[in-house]
Length: 348
Image 1 (cartoon, one colour):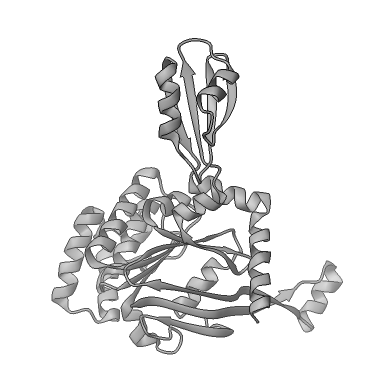
Image 2 (cartoon, rainbow, N blue to C red):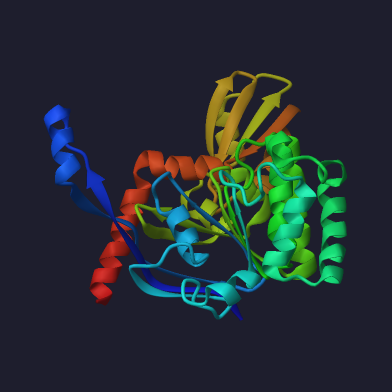
């Protein structure tokens, strides 16, 4: 069963164009000019129930706009959306009972109320039975370590404490789908790790579908088996993390330090027939570059270690953060986007 099903989704905004200078500002008061900006450009994807999917891209790529359409906050310009079988912006009251939402830079808690009072208000809004509410609250308090925070006003919480409470607030009604928009923004590594572990356990125990939008790609590495990459409002990649690494990753680097001097010619001779490139760091250290597609590090090491005395070995694998940064920096995203557009035009 599909938790999220999106076809040809598009969102356009009219954005005011400000004219320069005092004269231009005066004209803008009486005769405003607008230009049309397309934030999301005819994207299609589906997410099965129980999947944790990462939704990534640069600022302005259209991530948050997509989330807002999926949660019913924005109405699409065109295209079809179904989330748990509902059309979000049309069946709002029924739909919101099925989802939980966390926006990292916005709060769903009442600033001057105690945390538990905010939770009680949310219980009434979602019409959660008292017994179900108490059972879920007890579990969330224990798992997210909220015991000492319940009586505090939200405004007196640290960012990490507030984000744990925001997560709890989004889960009190036990939603089947959770949308997380920058849930770990500004948090220290300890809190991030706690939240990641909690989300993995939530998915494992309840089969909760999670769509995660984040700039912290370590969140993606820790949680997601699949990633959707957006650039300029279009999907340029939709697939597994391993496939992403295979397509754009530089493979593995193996740094070897030897007990005695060694030559480049000797290392090339030992690894003849393998897809390995060598670089000498000094006469007792070298780096082997193994492409992602082959990545046969064990055979390379077996040949070298069998013949040369090794003092130290370090294996460095390009992580998702490095890959995505390189895609955008090198212009690969633009190339990929052009290929997608070409395929679409041929299809039409």
